[in-house]
Length: 245
Image (cartoon, rainbow, N blue to C red; front, side, top):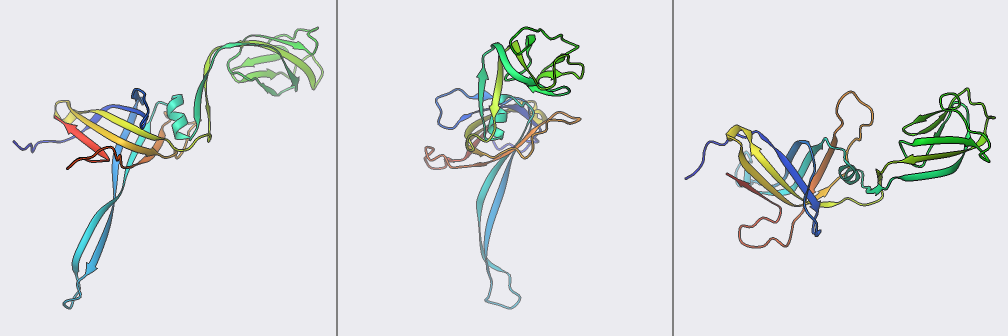
């Protein structure tokens, strides 16, 4: 029996993996927008058989189907995909006697973030500098104070430990093609499931990456559906499928 009543307000989870990869589909995270946009191309033949014109024939084709998303979890995987980068994990460890030059009122950007158990000594390790008088420990490194008791531009040695962290290197790879699945719920129809399989989505770069702001950041990402030629058969889409209860 045909269903007429079908208002829709959607929510749900999105999963993705690199298309064709032998890997599980992983949750993308909190997404406030997932939408499909259709770009239609129409060719028209004018009616020349009588005065006044008009359309004698027309053909419409789908030119593009875009996939727009607003990603609110800026985890390493999402960020790397959005900035055509690569993500990697760094194991925690200890740096011993790393050599730098001290400038009063200047930051020494350490090789690893969020240092702990910090010890700062002069070049040669004969003098140990005092935290709060000579320097501050910051998440991004060591800040040399104006009250630094060593000579300006003197060599120092920094020893510290650091916990594991993630690194995303930007613009180190090309756009990725993803296989995506949407496990949706129709809140306007008693939470019935609406499942969407997007077979091949060529992801574009994020339009902006907000680093300072008054609101939660989001990665605005757009991609285009490409044909999955492994999907064959009469009435079988090579682009996407919607299943609903």
